[in-house]
Length: 241
Figure 1 (cartoon, rainbow, N blue to C red):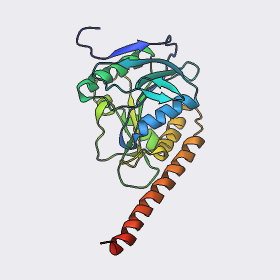
Figure 2: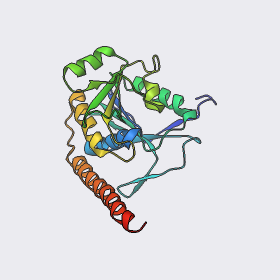
Figure 3: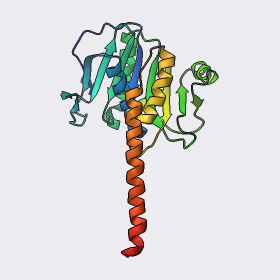
């Protein structure tokens, strides 16, 4: 690692997963990538094998299940041939390209057949839609044919996830799965939609029941708070000036 490298990978356990699909979940619209990837690692009981560190990464410690964790983590499952790289923070622009290259290196190391990024997008079309963008057009066409995804005609995907779709950064095909998401708040429902499609692609069952319940509760809470605050304003507004 030269002095140029600003990000370092700290390995906690040996990386034994081979021919593993690399799944990337970074926070985009509705935090879909982070929610989906984090849920996936716990549901599939994956090993926490390491994390990325950098002076440029904001000093954030995530707490899950009472344990403090670094914000950009790597999980692996040898038997399911999966690696998950997830971040709970937005990676600063100054190190986004380097982060993308680290992910490309990881895909090489585990001899990955493909890299799948999970995220959210606001197309304001029908709910529960999942969109796909891929560096391999055949891959995207096949998923459209199987009615698993729709294609994105116009839009933008930014940050590390956007960079992974650049030509020549990752040797393997890169597929971005984007769930129709609320931009303003965390959207576990969109994470469920994305995980369902992912499950069919990687042929690994993923039980999304807990996440669905969370989505329902959040939707209920959100609609109640929105409705009640709007109603209150309307009712009180006219009365109290």
